Length: 137
Image (cartoon, rainbow, N blue to C red):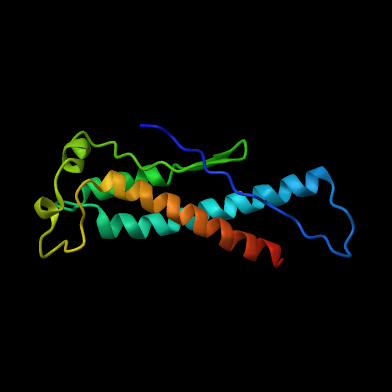
């Protein structure tokens, strides 16, 4: 699988304010990235509950626990979505028709692909939201 890097342009409008030091700019970037990570993790917990198939709940719980180990380091957000349970890779190969049932009407087949697409979308959206939130401070 080819990984495509996502880069976002960040501009600062200092207007009539003083110029920012390098440390202040890097600190603001860190704040933006950490806020983006936190929002994305919240969103992904909801998406896991909605889309990951559930029989006993063990698969979902394992993905939730892995997601909670996501981290921010060296100006890079690392979101971890892989399930540590051995049967996760087999459930991931099921079709949507094989995993949906009355208890779990929104589950999707190939949930990993779905979660990655959703996570990329949420990261972009949350980045823009963070810029508005952090910029308003």
